[in-house]
Image (cartoon, each protein chain N blue to C red):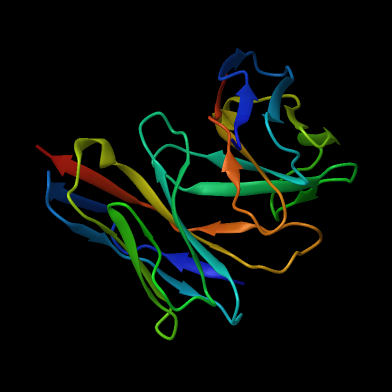
Length: 118
Length: 114
């Protein structure tokens, strides 16, 4: 079974600075998807960024980028020019591309709470 | 696009009663819907996966007779917590997806059992 590990329960960053959140995963599959989700205090899960394992190029979305190291099974999220609105829980998630009984389940890490200091 | 709604957003019920939570995909047809449970300051725990017209697939340790899931159409799935007890109090989140696309999450439902 796949597992996702986020080793940083909490992180803090100064506004306008850069922060990197860590995520490692364990899988025997060669093709899969990785995601970072943000959960602000409203508790609405918001997709931040997505990476397909077959793509070597790291995904970027405005101030958010990932460092995907497939051999090391590492998938870190970098947030540049941090803003107060970035404060939230961040969850790393893995998804197998293969339908298992018709589903494509997400496996979540335990999350990292990010605080942005003004 | 890709909006998922949940109703109600917060419900309080008495111990021993049943409560139904609805999950709707508003602008797309979801072949698969997922139900999660989240305790305070914890991650999401997958409870079950449902496909339209099929019986739900429950994760290990989840009581299927207590958490009834119905996926009656491509836009609606319901979770019924039967004979609720205080320990069932939690935050329940649904998500919806189509194959090879990301899951889209609802805003969640806070259940409090008194």
